[in-house]
Length: 319
Image 1 (tube, rainbow, N blue to C red):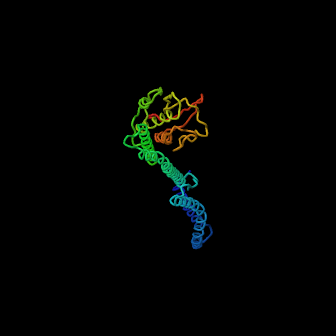
Image 2: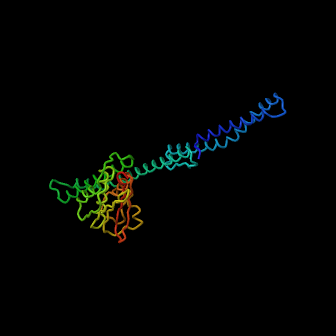
Image 3: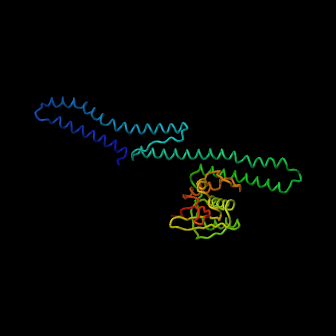
């Protein structure tokens, strides 16, 4: 498929060849005086110009109309219409530009939507622990009840965790590149995190991935926290090495999550129906963001025996 600059080049070249051929024929007509040849040429030049203009106009108009639609979409996006998109027509530079614009517009819409959800939900989620902290402070005297103090400490820790996860989620939304690209032994990292919990078994082969060790540690920790908080012991962490990727699964023995709820598990601030075990609602959303940041995927899978399994696939280092 000719590119845009080649189309203009071939159109110009064809016009010149047509002009040359017609001029040659007119100047070499048999039986006509030389003066007559010149008169014919003089009169034919404007006619050829009109013909070329008429034939070239539809092509030029089609190209410019595509650019006008792209300009309108850019102006609409700049005016705040984040759903603005433009049709991708053809395979030339204008089509590639339209494709790039659609990708950029889609990413902007996702970023703005994510931040709106975070801000809206964070303002709501922060009110509950803050209200409890304020009430506890008002009620606390010099000889405070130890249980009340423990509850206050838990509320503060919950608030601190929520703020930390909100900030991390915002950073992952805005920054698209992973700053740290270290060689990370995923099995060793999993062993360190599993040691922090009871009733957690780890098995699998040693595998090395390239990425941010702090983010990968957070991914593992959030999966284990989710299993401890919402699942049923024992929890099994399993690493399987494939040809170009590693499969990390965290499985608990709780009852499988219904399909209509499972599809929302990785959404920010989503809590399962009837869940009373607390949590910020951002843990699994961060798991998916971190996995995608490292070129992988994260999803929920119900096991064949009706239990819960969260699966993360990551590319191997050097794959």
